[in-house]
Image (cartoon, rainbow, N blue to C red; front, side, top):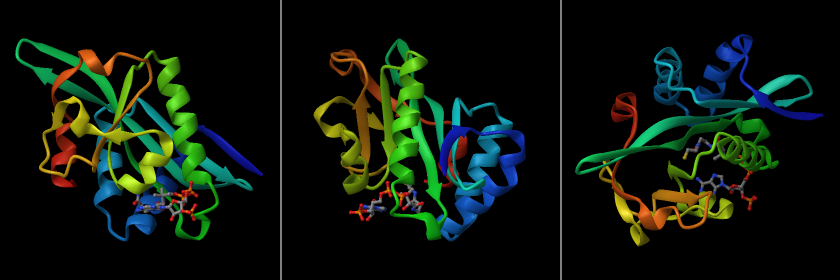
Length: 170
Ligand SMILES: CC(C)(COP(=O)(O)OP(=O)(O)OC[C@H]1O[C@@H](n2cnc3c(N)ncnc32)[C@H](O)[C@@H]1OP(=O)(O)O)[C@@H](O)C(=O)NCCC(=O)NCCS
């Protein structure tokens, strides 16, 4: 049986193990822990299969900074699924439930830095058709955006800035 639910305190050690196993290094696990300590976990959701936590997705606050203005939206990531449980639709479930959670919070736009071929499946689009850029030097198709309320992106411009903790892992 599969359940998608909010992170609970007892999940913290296994969330760390999921990121370490999926990415094959500790940078993303460290980032998730730092963001939690700094209260930047706006939405933290886990996938549970037969009682075992095997997947995790995080949404953190990001700001779109332009001259004289700053707007807050959410960034998707990091996310990870235990290697043995990948390609079974858990990543898709985590993203769709996470996006619903963003909608319920009144979030209008979500951004992601990630694999274009994967996130396009979830209606994320390359950022280069809009008037905002990433603070990171990444190709525009790696910095993607999904509009949750129609028309919002037309009015949004500036540089998208993540929590400073991302600077050491992107
Ligand atoms: C990315 C990840 C979370 C997807 O989880 P998942 O549960 O396997 O996702 P789903 O089952 O919903 O989707 C699997 C599909 O995504 C594809 N996919 C996974 N990673 C991909 C990538 N880097 N680029 C393109 N496609 C990718 C798989 O090939 C698979 O395709 P298929 O359905 O045609 O077989 C998981 O592969 C993972 O933990 N990867 C390592 C960590 C990582 O890269 N996290 C994302 C950072 S941006």
